[in-house]
Length: 164
Image 1 (cartoon, helix red, strand yellow):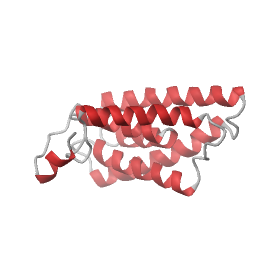
Image 2 (cartoon, rainbow, N blue to C red; image 1 turned 120 degrees about the horizontal axis):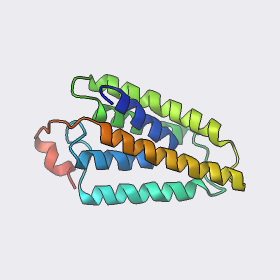
Image 3 (cartoon, rainbow, N blue to C red; image 1 turned 30 degrees about the vertical axis):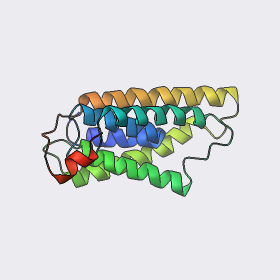
């Protein structure tokens, strides 16, 4: 995946499982596949983001889990999609367009994921669909990270502060 496909793909993951997208970004940063030094990729960041992703997947099956389309949740998914899209845009791609592609992916992932899942996570079929969505989000995240281009690392005053 070159150019903006990884940006859109990461955004799509954010729409389905936003913390899985954050974990994917941390893993991509650890492999030198993100633009700049904004995304921390140290072992602490990867562990924290991965634990948050697992917790989100568990919490998503609870009856009190909020709808992903409510404004705060939707806004966070858009923000993660934009940052991830910017960070994973290919070397010859515009990072600003990458951010827009990430946001478009987040919109698609949010709406299509919700439509495929249905409204009720309290039933056995609803939980099964949630588990299938978890698997799809993780699989797509792995595909996106493995296909993202390696980026030349830039050094600057921020690089030491952002690395964990």
